Length: 595
Ligand code: ARG
Image (tube, rainbow, N blue to C red; front, side):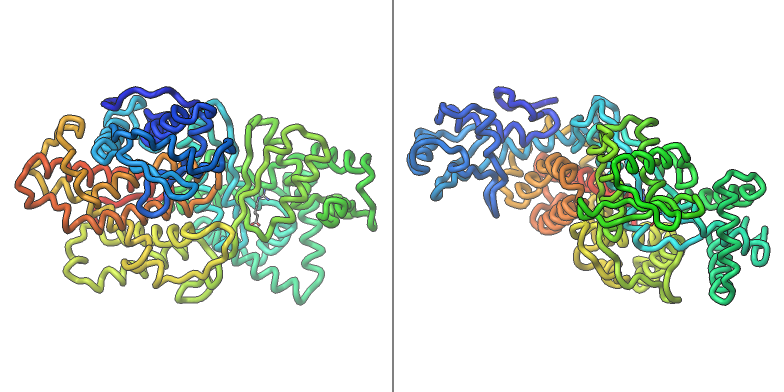
C-alpha cells in the first residue's frame, strides 16, 4: 500500500490498510490522548464520530467522563495546534471538538487506496470496502424459502433480496457463508396435489413449467375440497403415507420437487441470486422432532389435546402451539426445531440467520425459545432478520403469483419507459437485456431503500423512473461514470493515482465531497453488518451518485487543458465508478456498463 502519511500508533480493531479513514481517526485520537494523558489512544478513538453537515469528525468531550470542564479540556487539545498531514483545523463549540481533515492528503490517500485495492489487490480480486472481521467464522443464512405448488409472493421476494444482500455482506466481511433455501416442500398440501394430480395433472404441462402447473392443480383441488370434504380426508391420508415413507406415495412428489427447483434456479439466476444448498421441510428427520416433544414433556410443558401434542409457552409470552397432530404427522413448527438441530450438526455455525417476514415473528420466537429450553448451547446463535409487508404488488393483468411474472412485468414496464426516448432507445445494443436488468434494479432498490421493518407500497412507475432515488437512476450514474474512459482516450493509459499530482482536486469542494464519501465506504459495510440493514448501503449509493452529479459541470475532464488536472479528475471519477459498482454488487445488483 502506497501511503505517504507519517506513521501512527496502532489502535486495536482499526485497519488503515483497508480503511484509510481509520488513519485519520487515529491521528485525531492521538492528538486528544497526547493532550489529555488520562485517556489512552484507544479510549480517545472510541469517541471520534462522523461530524454533522460540513464537519469531518466530531468528539463530544463529556463522554470521556474526565474531571474538569469541557472548556478547559478543549483548550488543552487546541493549544499550539499546527495543521499537519492529517488535520487541517480543530474548532471548539461548547462540549464538542470539530476536526477538519487535510483535504490534499485525504483525497490522495483515498484514491491511492481504492486504486491499490481494486487493481493491485493482494487477493487478486477487487477488495476495497471489504474486511476480514469474520475470518474463520461460519454462518448459515436461510432465505427466500418459497413453497412448492403455492405462489411465490412478494414476501418471498423480499426475503430473497434481503437474504442475497446478507450473503454478499457476510462474505465481504470474511465469513464462511452457506446460503440455504428451505423449501416449503412438505405438508398436507402435497397430499392435496397428489390426489388432485390424478384428475388435473398433465405430464406435458409439468415439464413445461412445473411451478405454474403444480400451482394450478393445487388451486383446482382446493376448489373441489370446498364442495366435498372427502377430498381433504383423502389428502391427509396421502400425506400420512408420504410421512411414513411409502415409496408409492413419494415418487411423483420427488419429480415435482426436482422440476420446481430447476425452474427456480433459472429465475434466481436472473435476479443474480444463488444458493449453496436447496433443502426443505421434507428433509427434516423424525428423530429430533420426537426428541423435542419428549424433552418438552419432561419439562412439564406438553399437554395432550385429543391426541395432539401442545406446548405451553405462556410463561415466555409466546402462547401455546401444536407440535404434533393427532394422526402423528409433523407440522411446520416441529420441523423448524428439528431442522435447526440438524443444521447445527452439519455446519457447526457461529451464527445462523433466518430471513423471514415479520408476520412470522411469533413462530420464530417460539422455536428459538424451545431450542433454548432444550438447553442447546448454540441456541443463542440463531437470529431472525425480519421485514415488513409489501402492499399492492400486482401486474397489469392482475395479482402476481409467480416470480417470473414479477420479473417479466418489471422488464416490460421498463422497456416501454425506455422506448419513449426513441433516439436513445435505438442506440442501445441489447434493449431486452438492459430493460430486464434495470427493471430488476428498480425492484431491488425500492425494496431495500427503507428500514426492513417498514411496510411499503409497490409502485411500478415510481420505482422505474429515472428521476428521484430509484434503481434506474443508480444504473444511469454508473453507466455515465463507465463512459469516462471511453470518452477521454487521450488521457489513457492513465498512470496510477500515486504517480500523478492530485493536489489540484483539493481546491474543489465537489472533489472533496466525493473523496470523503468514497473513504467512508468501508465504514458503511461495517455498519451494515451490525444492523443487517441494506438501506444504509442504498443511502450511501445515492449520496455518492448525487455528489457525482453535482460535480460534472465544474469538475470537467473533457476540455480541461492541464493534463495533470484532467488525469486527477478522471481518477476521481473512475474510483467513484468502482466504489458505486461495489456498493451495487453488494446489494446483488449487476452494474451496467452501457444503457
Ligand atoms: N416456506 C415458508 C413460507 O413461505 C417460509 C420459511 C421460513 N423459514 C423457516 N425456517 N421457517 O411461509
